[in-house]
Image (cartoon, rainbow, N blue to C red):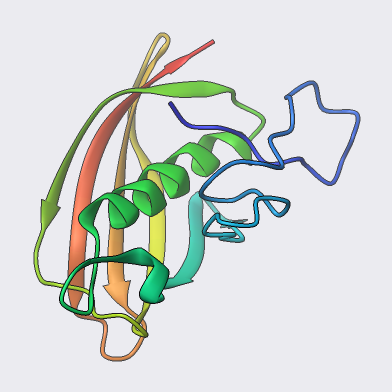
Length: 141
């Protein structure tokens, strides 16, 4: 289940989640990813540390999944839409080493009533190689 960052405009009626593991600014062990919406794409950046290791200097796949899930969730949130992940399929294309930075991007692929299908990608900031991509269904509240 994705959570939501506090919007700059407090008048919005979406609850804040400053302790969100992926994007919460107050979570001392979180990823603290900052997201931005430009046109219809949400972007962010993440660099794995030794605290995110899964195997031999490689960032754990669950950390990459969390980052991708949240870039898709924030694609909706930053458009004032509150939703939760219903399903997500991820493909890991190559390992992400500790210290490497990835660029995250999420976008809406289709909408049908309360179901929104989104896609997301994680690419190396240095060289643009695809690390992982995913497709997810989110249900609007």
